[in-house]
Image (tube, rainbow, N blue to C red; front, side, top):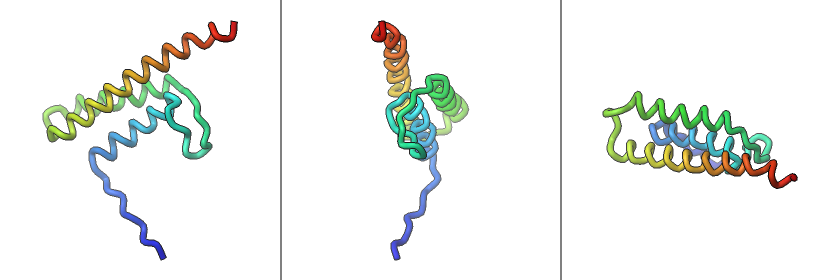
Length: 96
């Protein structure tokens, strides 16, 4: 019988959990339940805002590695959000 690896609850796991929800909402990853890619920019905004709130509420309480990781994830998601938003704005032009 294969032993299951215990999941460790830590700050990085929390960041990755929220970030993966944002990535799915940006259409960067499929929904694990449906295996379909769907964009929902409103939900992506919500998840990015959660990460921003987390950064604000944990200010001066994180290790330098945790702070760097959180900032990097937020920056990456914000750039990808802007790219997704621009792509969505151009979609009606493609159908004309």
